[in-house]
Image (cartoon, rainbow, N blue to C red; front, side, top):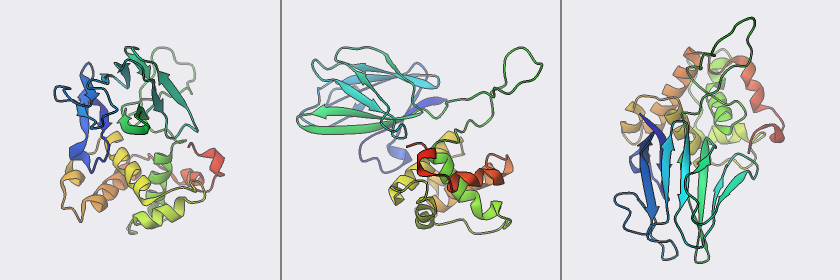
Length: 246
């Protein structure tokens, strides 16, 4: 199974994403990357770098001669790492990342997702041995969890057959905790949740007009069936902006 997903610039949907499994490598550059990620810009080296998937994180090699690459955590309030020219296999720990390449005065970027990040419970009483990895690893401090909670809110409030909110309604509902929320950012988080929760590909292959609705319905059904979002989680929709990552 894939462990890392590369989202190219101007990606329009799941078909444009590149999935790589543990141990696999993906080269990127202006040209000649042998089926890798092509970034068509004169300021990008022909072979600029390489990504290697490794379980729930990934490694970045900077193959340029003189350019430092920056890997940002879009929800980390400025958190980032630098990968200097010639550095091989620098580990990137972020669950989702933005790789920024300086290119002749421009800044080019593409995203890398590591949706198999796992978290273990630290609450144990009188037990020894290894902990059990949860079936669905969700970080409640991330924006994607706020989006999932807003999706589930109508049904969590006692309306089991309530229609799901439209993306525009989600943007408005999230304003208090995410003032810069936009339609495209909410769509991005819905797509990411579908990958992270390992939904079947049905919503991705549905008719264009039904695709997002089907994906939202699948997310809410899964989240409520397995108690991934509970009524007390609605507090994330009324928290102060500083309490939500990003």
